[in-house]
Image: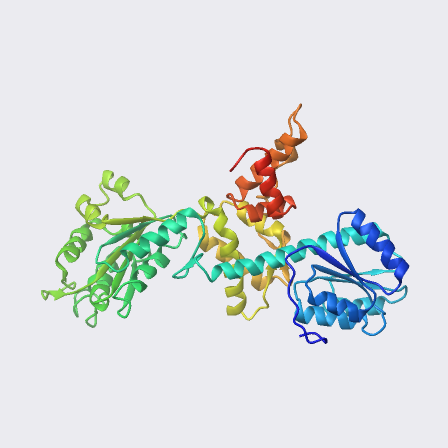
Length: 461
C-alpha cells in the first residue's frame, strides 16, 4: 500500500512518469521525450507522483529534491510496491554521494544536472527494455503453474503436448512403455510421470541403468542373488524386480543390456516370475515395466545385439522424446523454472535473464539437451553476482551461437526495405522456434506490431 492507502499495480505498457517541480523544465523535457516517441505523464511533486505511480507506469524519472515527498522516498515506495518499475534519479551538480545512495537503494540509474536530453532518452530505452523483460518473466512464471507443466515436465511446444497426452492416455494401464530419446531429454521424468499417474503410485518406483553397471552385475541388480552365488556374495540380495513388486520398474538404457540376459528378461516380463542368480526358487512378481533408450533398437537387432522377440515385447507403446533443439520454444519456460529452482536450492537470490542471453540460449543446439541446459544454468546462478544473467555470463560455446544473423545474410543487392524487414522477421521467428513473444523482444517491437507486419507481408511462419 502507498501513503494514500491505494495499492499499486505493475504496468504492462510503456508509460513514463516524469516528476519535476520546475514547470519549465518539466514541460521542455516532456516535449522532447514525446518527440522521441515516448508516452509521458508528469507530476509536479512527490505526492502527485505517488498517485500517478499507483495507476501503473513502466519507468519513473524523478528529481531527487522535491517538496512534500522527495525522490528517495518515491524510490523506496516504487521498489516496495512496483519492484519491476525502473527509477531514474536526477540529481543536482555535486550530489554524487546522493546518487550513489540512490543506486544502493535500487535506482536503475542517475543523471546529474545539467544533462543532455539524448542521454536521458537512451537511458529510458534501456529501462523500458528491462521493464518489459521483467513483466514477461512474471508471465512465464505464471505459465509454469498452468498447462505448460505436467508431472514435473515442462513444455508448451506441440511435441511436448503430444508427450503429455500420451502419458495421460497410458499411465493407468498395465501396458509396457518404451521411451526413446537422446541422452538428457528427460526419459526418467516421463517414466516417473507414468508411475505417478497410475494406480501403482503408492507402490515403489525403481530404476536400473544398464549402461552404468558392469555386465556381471546387471543380472544380480535385476533379479537378485542367493548367498554364495558368486565370489563376494556374502548374503542374499533382493533384486529390483522383487523390490518393485506392485509398482513400476524403469529399465534405463535397455539397448546396453547384455545379450545373454535378454531371454531371462523376456521370460520375466511374459510370466511375471523371476529366478535369483544362484537359486532354484522362482519368485512371482507384479511389476509394470517401463524401458528407455537413446539407441535405435531396430538397428541393434540388425547387428545381432538385441533380440527381436524382446524388442516386439517392449515395443507396445512407444513415446518419442524430442531433442531440445527441436523444441526451442520451450527453452524460456525451462530457463525460468530452472533458475528459480537452482537459486532456491543453493540459497542464492532470484535472478532475471536478459532478452539477449535468453536468445543466445535458444540459438544453441544443446547436444546434452535439457540436462545440459540445467547444468549450464546452475553454474551461472551459483557463480554470477549479477541480478540479471547476461550473455557474458554464459559459456563460450553458447555465446558464440548468437541469435542475431550477420547483416550480410539479410541483405542482397536490389533488396527493398520491406523485403529486408520481412527477412529479419522470418529468421528471428525461425531462431525462436516460432515464439512470437521472444521474437518481438529480439526485434525490439511489440507482439502486436510483429503480428501486423506478418499480416502486412502476407506471410505466416
